[in-house]
Structures are given as C-alpha cells and as structure tokens.
Image 1: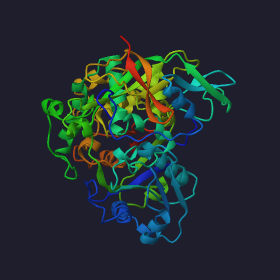
Image 2 (image 1 turned 45 degrees about the vertical axis):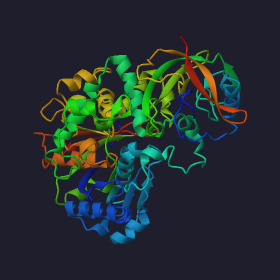
Image 3 (image 1 turned 90 degrees about the vertical axis):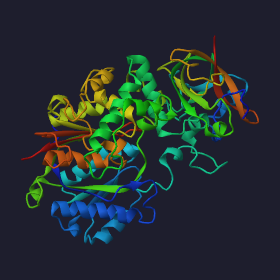
Image 4 (image 1 turned 120 degrees about the vertical axis):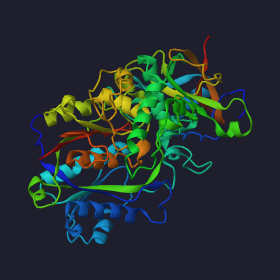
Length: 394
Length: 147
C-alpha cells in the first residue's frame, strides 16, 4: 500500500442544488437537480461545463452519464463508473474511481455526483417498499419478515451492542445530535437551524429503541457534485485545489448486506477499521494529522463508532470522547462543522465532501482555524464503504 | 396477528427458495436448521450458496439444539397495533447467537415473541426457538425466553 500514488488528483469545484424535504423536488427531477449541482461546481472551478468528460456515482445513482453529458454539451465522454455495492456508503468508491481515472489519464475532468428525490422512502424500501402481498427480494427474507425494515434499526442494533459492551449512553448519542444542530445554526443552507437539548432529544419519540427521532436525519431531496482533475490542470482554474491525498474502499470481513453476521470484534462498528488502516498507510498521515472530520451521520451511533474506527479514540471510548466536548468545533476533533446529515441535509455523504473542501479553502461557515487535512468516513452499509483524505495545497 | 405472539404487523413473508426452504420447514416443527458445509463442516447463516470458510458449494441442512443467547436487540413501535389502541405497541427484533455451531459464531435475526416490555430483554438472555407459521408447513424461526 505504500506505493500508492498520493495527491494524483484534486477537487477543484464543488456545487449543490437547492436542498428540500423528501419528495419536494419530484417535479424538478433528478437530471435537473444533478445539472444544477454540476453547473454550480463548474462555475466554482471556473471550468466550462462542456469540458467535463467523466462521471462517477454510487448507490445506484439514477442519472445516466450519457444524458448528463448531452445536457452539459460534453463533446467527448471519456469515462463513467458506478460503484458496485456500498449503497449510501459508496462515496469513497466513486471518488476512488474518479481518482483512478484522472491518475491513469482516462479523462480530464471527472464529476462525482449524487442526486436524490425521495419518491419512495429509502427507509421503507427494504420491506414495505414492495406492494402488499408482493414478494420481497430473496436476501430480505432474513430481515424484513421480522420487522427489520428501517435503516435506523441497523444502527440501533449496533448501538445497543455498543451500550452493552462499553456503557455508552443515550446522553452520548444526544451529544452527536446536539453538536450537529449547533453547527447548523450558522449554515444558511441547512434544513434544521434550531438547537436541541438533551431533554428534547430524550423526549423525542422512539424510532427503534435505543434510537429516538433526534438520533435520525431527515430524508431529503437535492444533489451535490465535485469536479476532480489533475494537479497540473488545476493550476489553470480559479480555486485553490483540495488535493486528494488518498482514498480507500476496503471492506470489513463478512461485511455483507446482512451485517448481523459480521465477526464479533467489529460488530459494533461502522465496518471501517481496515479502510482506516489502508487510508492512513496510503496517505502517510494518521488520526493526529486530521484537523476536521466529516463522518456519515444519518444516525447518531454512526459518529460514535466512526471515532473508534478511524482511530480518534480507543474502541469503546467514543462515549466519553464526545462527552468531553471533543467533537464540537472548539474541541480537539471538530466533526461535521456544517451540521452533517442530522442538521444540514441528507445526501449520503456527498455534502460532507463539499464541506471538507470548504474547510481546506478557509470558506466554511464554521471555519476551523488552520485546517489543512480533512477526513471523510462512510457509514454502515454493505461493503464497499471507505474513506477519503483531503489536504490543503497552499 | 393476535397479541399472544409479539410479532410486527404487516411484514412480508419470506421468499421460499432452495437455499432457505429447509429452515422454514424445520421451524414448522419448532426446530432450528441452518446450512452446513459438507466439506469443512462450518455452519452458516444467512443462507448462501458458498461456504465462507472453504468456498465449497456443497452443503446440506443441519439441525441445531435450537437454543441461543441474545447478542443485541431493538424495540420498534408497531404503528398498526398502536393505532388499534393496543397497549403492546412495540415489537422487538433480536440478534441471537446460536448454540451448537461449528466455525465462526452464527447469529440469526428474529423476534422474541413472548417479550413485550422494553425491559423484558437484555444482552446475554437465553432463548429457544419456536416456529411461527407463515404458510402450510412453513414457519419463521422465532424465539422465546428461557427462564
């Protein structure tokens, strides 16, 4: 892993569409949302959108690259790739694919794009997304008939185990939500700009005990995009590039769709300890070098387990880590200073990547002083998930 | 769904296929069966075509003791029952580590059908299999608490 070609590509443009509640942009449609994000990213980069010649995506992105290319005026489409597996955790794979395409000279400007219109709830698609009486997918036969039908349930099951093993509490979970809401106060794009207290968290209704409503993000509509190119091409563009120091999409052992049968050592985790090992080895950097962390936080336990998986505290100590205020923007490891999925918008990690770039540019709403290295870590999903490390270049 | 068995309302039945039919049939007899590798002897769940330990595609069904230990669990509001005014408004989903397996521990996701209250369950609780029918001769392997 030490021969990984570091800093071979960089992010030169970031953009997003308007953010809305679930189903709000059904009439706008996924292509227009994606194009809004891509146009914004191109304008941010100072790049003619017609020069974009590659597209990568994840989570069964429903936009078609060839159609996007026509609408953008791309004359030659050189590269497309969709991450196979990983669902919402697949962002590092999409970035890895763009990175590899740039490093190999397969394309000049690759867009990583994620667009979502929640016409059917992801949360219900595992079970009730099928019509009454209709057959479910075969792999769901071991979960859905027993009522394991919500993404929240997957995190709740891991959270319970974490609590049982390590004494993690609902106060620790609440701190993750409180931090997200507090940070979003200063983010004009955030959907939830109202602080919450521990008492309000504990009074919110049970979704999947031990998780309550305020442990969960709200499903959203919108799109986000980043433009990846080579360090050489970046010099002609208008933004200081955020170098992609390294990326990894290593899966955890037995991290399949039915992750209740992962091995015991990693059950109460996001499944990223091997991805972290590989990312840090490739980057030649470690947790101590990270100035700001962007963790997939569709549900609060994801942040606690990510802190352990990515080496910011020992396994089992994330509860006391957050209780000390460590993830606040004034703390030793600011986490999701834009508000994350819990308070800004839920677009499956893509907006976390935008925030990582803003932090390295020094243009974030809650700017971390002197931020030079930013880490993105994915959430729980079937492999591949992974991580991305970005570094300021000037 | 009667309130004698705490099961979620409105959930779909499983898809019956060659890789899983044996477990539904065993559950109908209140027994617990999982796949067993004919080459290395490892038990596995959820059902799949190949062995995680030796990659063999040859397998058969093995009947386990039927007992196990709760590894983790959650409680989920049952909106159908709550809307009907039932006091038993939560169902549980539990991950159970099965006794008597060869290889890495085998865990099954299921329901503990005689647990009703949020403090009825705890990690480490012993349970045993009980079948809950979903079709003629076919049942879901669920569990009940062992005192």
